[in-house]
Length: 307
Ligand code: TXA
Ligand code: MG
Image (cartoon, protein in one colour):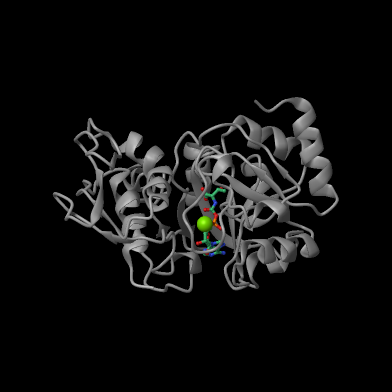
């Protein structure tokens, strides 16, 4: 449990340029003062992230977001419908924004998200400024959905870990870019389903420019073991990650009853656990592609990509 004292300590560390791991409803974030370029540089170094991969600035609400980005009415409709929650908006950055250019990797746009997790909200309010935060994993590895997942090599570089148990959703936010003409593009499928976003934007354009969301590099979210997808059964040298059926001996199931929300919450923890068995390969059951299944399949495909 996180108490008032923990939140105050975290806010003080952020003000001093420190790095704080904090819970959000999607995955744990590795946060720093978004307006402090030294702190942002320290964060990139801790994460081992290439500097061209920009960070999401976390804000308490849409009023705070408006100080940093020019939101088209469509973008504003999205914030009204889904904030606070697992939606990240990419929009034109305001010249007057105090967020460090390094946090945006020099782009003319900025990514903003208002998380709904009570501890994240409390921290944003106590700190009073945007918090730049990528997922709290070393670059290229799966996101942390439990404080225990914060890698041994990352921990010593972090000033404080706010542990609030497993992440309620377990999958990163959906990233939607809305340009100055109100055209909406899906940059990353995520915890908010495409169907929910499209109810407001109409059909989303797909991004064809991988540089635009550099974290979308094919081999992102990779465990050490090889992954074989859409596998109805494991081969002799594989451990099995089931869906819609119970775990096999030595394997795990994302959801025995075939529930996509449960599967999203288990995805990263199960990939880590099967990876930790030292298995050469993980065979993964087919997962339906609608709703949250789109983001789950996206992450599995990236984890399976050659590297
Ligand atoms: O759920 C989440 O979004 C979590 C929690 C901690 O909020 N954060 C997260 O951050 O997943 P990260 O850094 O792992 O992924 C952010 C993605 C990256 O792929 C990055 O390239 C993209 O957002 N991004 C950031 N700024 C962008 C921009 N201006 N234009 C396009 N993509 C951007
Ligand atoms: Mg990440």
